Image (tube, rainbow, N blue to C red; front, side):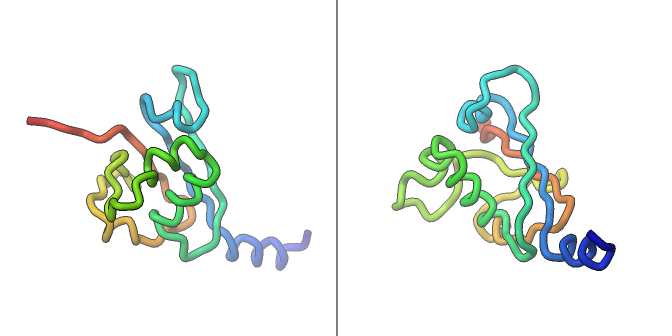
Length: 112
């Protein structure tokens, strides 16, 4: 592959790193104590919500829990952290991902 082809290929896809925390790892078929880190390559313009739907198709157990209730118009299955910033609500899930972004899926936080 020559440099021109490599440059073109690099501009037509982005790579995102996803770290799945705690008991959520089971929904991705992982049954260990170690870290679960996934890498996804996708098209530019992909939003966080798009990525969650991609993961739901690849990992049906995650998909069933995250999107199984068609009456819900919000995503509350887990907390989402993008590059160190907690996201809240669907509007922030429309954020377009960029090459090198780091997404963390963590169990939701509750307090009182």
